[in-house]
Image (cartoon, rainbow, N blue to C red; front, side, top):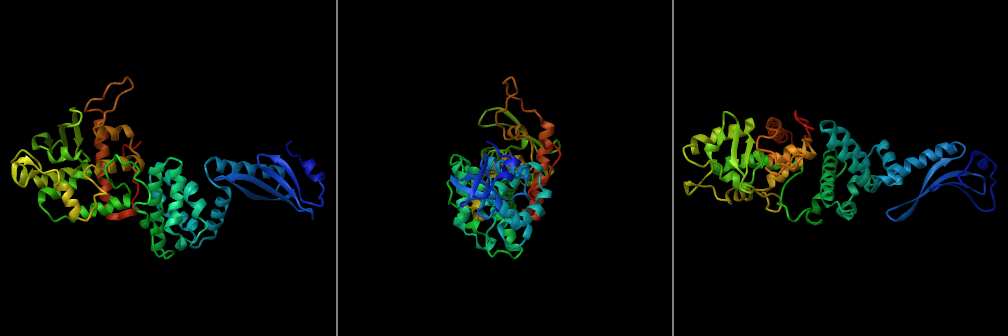
Length: 404
């Protein structure tokens, strides 16, 4: 039966500690010296744990029940109440512990993120990182300890999130290094420690900080103007590699800022709105290749398109490893960041990727569906890429017109 105030007041200490249960793990422990402690028994990670909720009568029965309910709400979200309390104490006290550094990092950078991305990162901190690492000095956390956190996430069937969690932790560790509270980032030691998130997909960079580095590397390419233009255009338009290298000038209207072609995979008509950055690249290239059929002709002759290995070989010369980025990877990069960082509508992204998108009646949309919104999205995407190239990893999310 649930406790009552009268039952608590009338309870007497005994020769051994007495436990008065209120239910759902909450009980009052009365010591032999008549000290009265509220305790909450619970299980986390298949282990029984105990949480102190204060002493009676300073903490009333009503107060204790409220604290119990708050703790159980954390458990329902997969958060250990004891670890959460320790992390909060650490954060409040400041210092070099992971929780304090993580909270400071989040407070500094999250105002610049879109709401959806901010909530996602907050959830990762509260549920997966701080409960396990928060009480540790940041400089003492090892790669195996971080891997153990990621493997808990992997064990619940969220392998993709586990990979992204490691990248998120890496940003926190790098911030700790920059602010003098750690000497290195252990997340870099975990490359290959988890299985690929999806072995059937092409290698791709989706971490904004690494994307910024990649874009700066591409800007530094000093090979042929044709390959340089293809490299610079690939992340902006994120079409399939074969469609990019076979692009024809007659399909591109620079004044209307549109590229119209037939999708090779589905044989359907498709429109790529061209950002001002894309148009600028193409206008620079036009005097060199505009007299021929192909935008990116082969080095062996204007009557054939660029070889399928030209862009890949250029990326390898730049030092971009094949297990990190492929020609198809620009599509995955755009899809992930447009959705999870910039918050654009998934259906707009799928349309722009030339994937089959159907209306509520099951009919495929035509090529002009949501063209105005897609045009806004493509310009926002190009502006975002320009922004992170300049500002690096500090720019993670910038809300643009047309976001959901």
